[in-house]
Image (cartoon, rainbow, N blue to C red; front, side):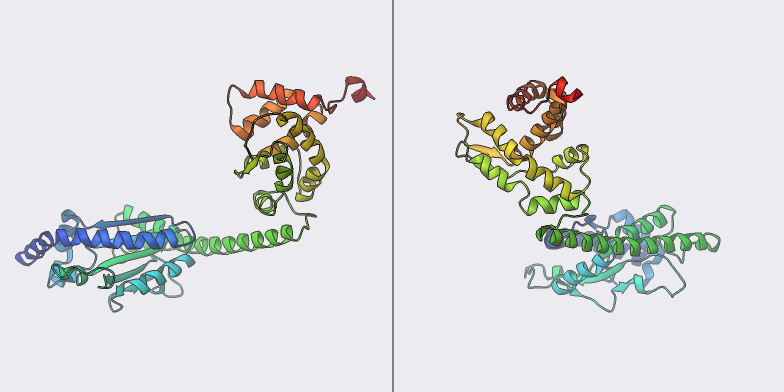
Length: 365
């Protein structure tokens, strides 16, 4: 490197403490936006450019910088969202909280002509505003610029692939490979858009299902994760659990009931109406089963598993499926453990004492 670049590198070394403080402030601030964003962020990272990386940059184009402050990406933040429309939503957070250098910020998503494809990302050049942090002993914290990169996960994949191939931009790429890269970029852009549309369609479907279930209309609604969750949210097993809790004046601890969806699917319930009919048909038997299970015992709390578990056990025994299937039920709900076999025998016998299991003669008849 020439003398000018060596001086820039010396300026970098002198600012390292300031860069570290800037990174801390920016990371803490952007972390708040990530946590409050409302949807899951694919990744968030911050970094200070290493001396080796900066040296390589200066060797390539050091003469374009007058001072070390002209290099705006020494401190950098990257946020990768799952969907491309979330990039703009997150960008609003950056714009409203940091001082954006609009002249040097670039939206590379809008730089392509209508018939070209390539690297897409939103790059902001920012400063830390004094209202966010100020130290009169180190005013450089509010003067030195830093870079924020915002992109979707597929845009990030494109950038990573291009970088892995050894090219940091389309300009560097040999023409013989540029067309192939451009075609792949076009596919990723189409996929990015398609994933957004699919996400929106799924969100609309979930809203419709929640409203239909709330209205109590279960006909022809497929039993799946969305409809099952909506059913639980609208008190699917709540009445039975409250009734069971009265047996010993117990409280009901609400716990996730996700595992029962697999159970009900195994019962060959295909619609939400089949599940609701099952709950209505077997609730009295489930309550009687619970009376025999809990009556006279010193129990203060039961979990919300009690209702659907009792329903499932009386259903299994009424179909003459026996303790082995009850054990599979316990394995599904509680996880595989050595005590499940003994507990299954006990619960099966309680259900059989209600006269639920049919004799061989009844089955033959």
